[in-house]
Length: 73
Image 1 (tube, rainbow, N blue to C red):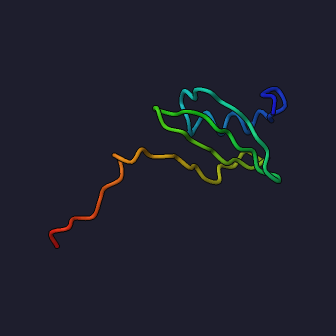
Image 2 (tube, helix red, strand yellow):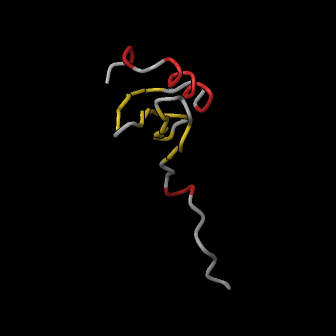
């Protein structure tokens, strides 16, 4: 999706959630705008309604960021 077709209210909502998105690409899933980008070195997807309301943010964490359960319990 081209950035110039995204409503201004949606781009403003993204700016509140992601300060400096890198590799930004826009998609539309049903009525939801989805901004996929790199944010602080992590793959991120931000879901925003056409009215500019943030719905959710999904971030892919590297394996080393996930805490493993302790085996000494």
